Length: 348
Figure (cartoon, rainbow, N blue to C red):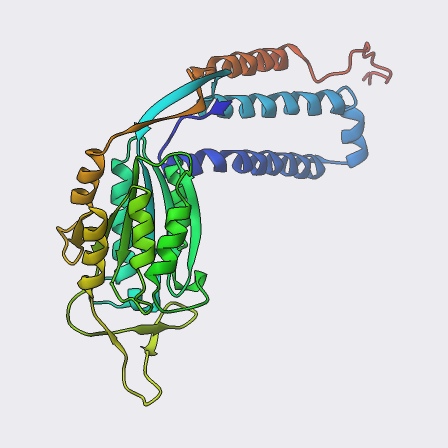
């Protein structure tokens, strides 16, 4: 397994640009040298005078210098190698996130909109996790398991970034279907250490939750809810292909559709399962209270295999580059055969 030193983005791009720049400089020198030789005199005479130079050896020396440069650049990247696979133990709980991606989550009563605010809060939550497995379910009129339970928080963040209303073909909001998919995302062999977080504006177009909440209680799932949005009616924007607002959603009669936060359903879900409700309507509101409750739950141990004990190996590439440069200095680009003058001296 190999890793590299982490550099600022500008320095990384600079290091990557060095190789093509060196190649262009080398090509420019070759073209310039050929142009100067051609302008120095008769080409046949120059060819006779330069017979002692071996083109193969000169090309070989150029290759040695280029490989040396590559090795030095590789060393600068700070390669680290490891062949030690160890088992890492972590403690935490399983957390399933249910994220509402219905059209109403695009309302801009919270800037830039409700969905972006939800993503922002979830990324803050990710930074606090220290061993919990996390899964993502996106829902509107239907639900979809976007990311199964994982300890790979970067993968979760990647899938969170592409989660929007385009993922669900059926619009509306169905908590029942979302909860069913969310419950199925948990490990069936572990009936403890389970928590769920719903982030939504609370609009439920189905309204049949008794059966699924009963199942959640039976399977020891604590469901926390986070309401997002304002209590006043807000229009739902429609975006064009460039992401610009081209209008607002309207009814068949031409009236603008508005959406507001409905806390009743969200509060009922959290009360029924022993969870907490928070309102994400201000800059200071966050999921910290919910995560504090999760930290108070009984933790279970997760284990996974990881490569560890990475060792710096840049010096090996530096020494190899130095050896190639020394070989370059020791090799001449002249022919090895004896060169005798076969012309005639001019005598006055």
